[in-house]
Image 1: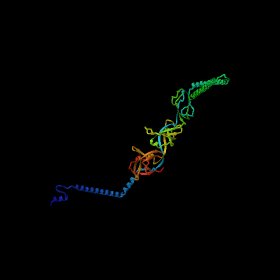
Image 2: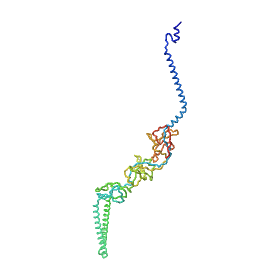
Image 3: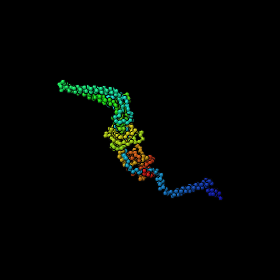
Image 4: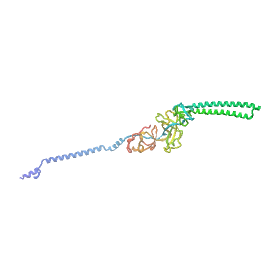
Length: 398
C-alpha cells in the first residue's frame, strides 16, 4: 500500500510544495470583489442610459435658457424731429451807443457834480458845473462896454441930426456931414462889436456846464468836485444812449454764415436767473485773422442785470433742423468721440459713431451717424460690449 501517493492526491499538493488551506480563501475573495466591480459598472452604465433617455430634449432647452439669460435692454427708435436751429456763443455786454462826455470849453475847477452812475438823465441836463467867477466878471465888463458904445452911438447920431439941419443954411459943409456920418456908423459898429464879445463870453460860460448830449443812463463818473479839468482831461462821464444795451458775441466763420440781422437771440448774463430776448442788429463784415472769429452785435433793452463789461451766453435762433434726437443717457463717449449702441435684427449689439449737435429740451440732436430708424440702446450702454446678445425692450413713445 503506497501511503505517500494517497496523501499527495488527497492534499492536492506536491512533495516539494506543501498544501496551504488559506490559498482557497484568498481566491474566493478575489472572485467576489471582481463580481462586485462588474456589477457596479453595469449599474453606472444603466444609470447613464436612463439619464440620457430622460434628458434627450435638453439641448434645445439649454439654448432657450441661454436666450432667457441675455440682458434685457431698453431701446428706442428715435425717428426724425424738427428742432429749431440754435447757435450758442459767449461774449461781453456793452452799451449799444456809448456816449463819452468831457469838457467842451476851456475848463477850470469843478464846482459841483450833479449825477451818479446808474441815474437816468435827459438831453441837455447838467452833469457837472465848473467854477465861472472869472467869466461872470468878464460878462459884466463887456455889458458895460456895450452901454458905453451905445451912448457914443447915440451921441454921434444926435450930432449928425443937428448938422443935417444946418447944412441947408450953409453953416455945415458936405464934408462935415460925411465925417459925422462916419463917426455915427463907427459908434454903432462898436455897439455891435461889444454885443458880440458879450455873446461869446456868455457862450463860453455856458460851456463850463458839462451837459448830457442825449437822454440815457449814466454808466461812469470820473470827476470829483475841486478837480481841475480841461479839454485834454479826457472822458469825465459815460452814458448809454437811451439805456440801450447789446451783447458782442464771437462766432466762428461757419456759424457767422448762418446769421443775418433781425433774427432773435436769448442772452443770459453770468449770474442771472433768467434770459433776455434780443435781436441781432449787426453782423461783422470782417473776420479777425488771428482768432478766425467774427463779431455779432445783439441789441437788448435795458435791464438792471445787463451790466456793461460783464460776460453773457447767447442762443441765436438759426432756422430749423430735421434730425434724430436722443436722450443723453443713450450717448457714450471715449477718445474716438461720441457713439451709441445699435441693436441689430439678430439682437446683437453694435457700436455706431455719431456726431452730436444742439442740446434741446427733448434731448441731443444727432447730426451724423443715424437716420432715425435704428434701435438705439437708451440706457445701460456703458455695461454692454459690441457683439453681445441682448433682449431688446422697446421704450414707450414720449
